[in-house]
Length: 432
Image (cartoon, rainbow, N blue to C red; front, side, top):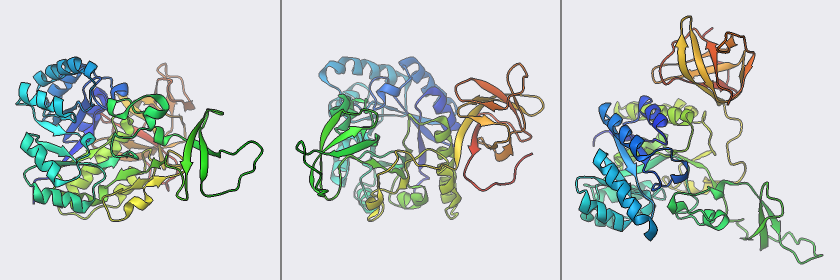
């Protein structure tokens, strides 16, 4: 069997990078400012990105830098300057999609490994062989491939490193090729400014001549109205299958990692550079456990499915990986899964004697709430017995966005610890 696949996690900020590594990532990916597909939500600058490349190497981890937009002529000069700055820092790879820019990097920085972005929609082994011959080191395969197709690509081009997404959001079109964001907001997905229009909530209204009543026909001309924008109507066609704006469930392949490994995937990639630290940490920890169990020939632990369901999600699907699974991929109701078992409560930022921890509150908590404590080393539950502000004044309740509070626990307090409020799960034994 090939070497154990790496766990590759998103680093949407310097802080998120450190949480991802602490919770078990082997490698992270972060975007070059202005030239990755999360350009609008990227807090990095060239200086901080170079610092984090150095940090990853100091702790024995890898970092890949994303530069995968399809640049227009006016962006070429600044794109070249940014790549030159980052190449000097020595990342472990650069993720790209534009052939001209790939040629530029090959010529100017031949020592810099090139990973082909999922933006290129690589879906067959002949394309993989083409990019291998062109000097690309790794292919990030399209999410639209089945397990059988992945296996055939590896069989035909066994020397190519293959990376596959295993968790996170899915586009309703081939990755990054959706036109909805451009149509509605003039913000292009492949320029790093997607507004995720496919996940908005819409009302559909039948377009009728004045004075006529609806025939309730399954076919006809319709108008859609985004929730909150009453009267701002846009035309859309609907047939017997419904409309074609839809909100995909999230990809989850945690229980199928062994199959992906046997199919030749060397890197398991988690999506979500804009997701919360809570989401990132729990998902990273869950996949870390699944990979370690797989490497030790242990059976998959179904409790890990429950761990992933503690984070915000749109419901889960294996999408195209398994036969016929795409039939259950679309999500037609709320953009987010209702009734989450737990809600992100806050992150631990400090501690003091007596079992007190300082918590940066993210969502409302109050004395008496059941809390799950999550760190890279420990996980336990307790009930909030007391909270106080920095002046020592007792607090019955604390709200997200209002700063930090001190909270008492009898459990351990670790670096990178997070708290979630238990909402819809059966009560477990508590640390009292």
